[in-house]
Every structure is written in structure tokens, then in C-alpha cells.
Image (cartoon, rainbow, N blue to C red; front, side):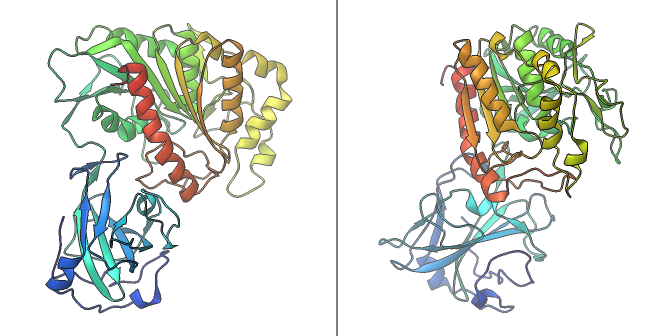
Length: 462
């Protein structure tokens, strides 16, 4: 915990987008006296740095019973980066305590009880603080014009030492390993598959997080589109056309030769098109033990290119043993682009309607996968109807006597992957659905469920 007698006013610059009390919109709030600081105190049960997605156990004590204060959260995601901010108005209990996990926010950037509310609700501010430049979080308890207490801490993807190795023979593939793993241990493996953004996006986002929790985490880039900054992983396919499932099988053969991983305990984890690939691969390849599919699809869909138009209905997304796998053509482009931003879900809804026989042939045979499956979907997904497609997957497996775990969030959108403690990016040119609140709260449920599922299916519940 860091308490500062020289604390500067939180709102020394005009802020953007925060719901603030008028009394706090001051340029010259007084400094906090030592006696006032000694009364109020932040504490955190988690270690510092804390592991993002794990319970933090942040409390504020030493307040007057029933006292109403504002808690401001500021965060830099990198040194000297812009400051993101949020706030919550909370009332102390009869003992003069506030706990972020159990005390409701009465007003501010979010309301109600939400342990991660101060984090997912942050927005970029134009505040400048030349003294505080670190990539960390600062919490401040404010009453009227006075800062009662402050605490700074770091929130990281990993709070243990992680080593990263390239996997020879597989372009762009890498493995994340915790360095504190026992020397003779064989770690279970999670293979990460990115969505239509391609490249190493899934690896960067989830590789360290899962390695910190005891998994050998493999990022497997399988395509990398052309972007204004070039191709992230040169040498990979630039178009999402006939991506070979065989490549994933070849990766498994390489992993099976390592003596530090257990090739009998491998899960696939992917979102969106990565979830489509994960489910399709699990239905074909016998070595997959469990799957986490975020915003999934029950069908194989038409392929696409990011930087050029393709002849409609001609190219599929995936191939196996040199042959294009059956796919469902898109339809309804006029409906999808009738709004700004475009709602791509229409091309999949209309494609299923327009090509029922093609859709039947392109159905992913999820009943062929006898392992464990976790699906995560948002009912307001506007990229494609993932909640409906997840229900179809559950039905197909149930008919085959197979259980499926489904987490469906009616008001969340496409961005249900994450842990709820980082900001979602809604800057894509297409509608995602959901919003910061619905997606953030869905993630705070889905992430611990994902970690628990992987531990249960790969580590025997350890």
C-alpha cells in the first residue's frame, strides 16, 4: 500500500466521460493531513503484482460508519501511456469498512455490486500526472475535497516468471512455460487459436495468463492477414481460405516429442473463427481432450480475405488432407451493410436460410468429439449469432449422450473472452454487440469458469 502526503488532486485536468460529483471538479483540492490519512486505509488480499482475473480482495477501512465516499481508480497500461479512469460512490458499513467485492456502488461509472466494476468501466481521460508514470493502478478514496487514502499496485497477465520458446517447424508458433514448474513434471497443454484478427493475438492475450496458472500454453498462429502495418507473422496464409486442420495435427506431433509437456492432456481454446477451428479440429483429431469455444459456431463458413473481394460462395474456410471441407456460403450482405457500423451477423443468419442443404453438410460433427466442452456466448453478439449456434452445439451433443457446459449471457456481445479487469476494444469497423458493462460482467464470470474447466479437464481438478 502506498499513502502519499503530497497527493495531488485527482482531477487536476478536465476528464472525459466520467460520472463525477460537482464538488470534485476542482483544480486545487487541499493536501491530506497525516492524521486524516491514518484513519482511512486501503488493503489488498492479493499479492502485488496481482494476477489479472484473480480475486483482489480490496478493502477500505477506518471510515465513519455509514460514511459515503468516492473511490477513484486510475490506470496506465504501459509507462507514460494515457491514464484511464473510473469512479464509484460507496457507503461504509456499520464497522466503517468498504469492500469492492461486496459493497454496492451507488453512483459513478457503474452501479451495484461488482468486484471488477472499477476496472472494466474505465475510460480514457486527458489527465496529466508527471510524477506518476508507472504501468500500475492507483486507487484514491475521496470525501468532499479531501483524499483520505491512496494505494497503488500492479495488475499483470502473469505474476510469476514465464519463459517463451519458438516451436521449430511451425511458423509463428510459441510456447509459454512457467519457470517454477518442477523439473521432471509434464505440464498439460492449452493450444490457443486466434479469431479473424489472425496472427498471434490469442497468444499475447492468454499465453502468459494460462502459463501463470500452471499450463504449458501454445500460441498457434495459422493465418496472418495483410494490414496497414504489414503482415504480423510473415509466411502464414494471408487469406482465411482452406486453412489446413493438418497443420494443427502436425503441431501436436511436434509437441508429443517434448519431455516437458503431457501430450495426453491437450485442450484447444479459441474465440470466434478460432472457436470454429477448435470445434472442427476436435471433431476430426483424436488427441484433443477438452475444448473452450468462445463465441462459437456450429457450422463451417465461407472463407474470406481482408484486403480483396472474393467470388461469393467459392472458397471455404478450412481444409483437411488437401480437400476443402464443406462450408456454408454467406448471404444478406445488403442487410449487413445497411447500418453503420455493419452488423455482420446478418450474413450468417441469411446464409443458413438461403443454403439449408449446404448448411447441413457444413455442420461441425461435435458429437464425434467425446471430450469435455465449454461454450461461452453472448446473446447480443452482432458479429455472428454465437448464442444460437452454441445452443445448436449443445443439442447435437445431447442427442449423442454427451454433456456440454454452456455459459450464455443474454445481453453480452461478441467480446465475452477476457477476464473483466481489462478494457474491451470496440473500435472495430463492425458492430460487436453488448457494451462495457454486459461484456465486462460476463467476462468476470466466464474467466474463472474457463480456468476451472481447464484445471478440471487437464489437471484433474488440482
